[in-house]
Image 1 (cartoon, one colour):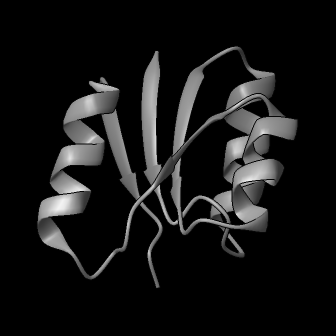
Image 2 (image 1 turned 60 degrees about the vertical axis):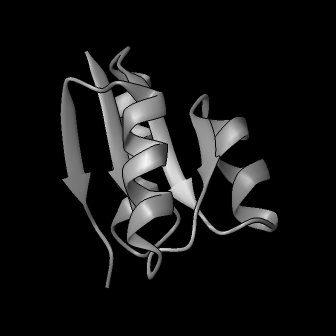
Length: 75
């Protein structure tokens, strides 16, 4: 399943990415640019950089990922 996680490098998001990737799902994780990008790649997820406060950027990130499921872990 293709899964998009907003807040993918947070306290809940990162463990969730780890589990979903281990189960074989194709995960796209939204994060800010920086160290989070490398963490997501190490776990097998596709990073997507967007500012959570920019609704246009978030919408574009989700559309580009074309997921089956969107999980909001933004805090």
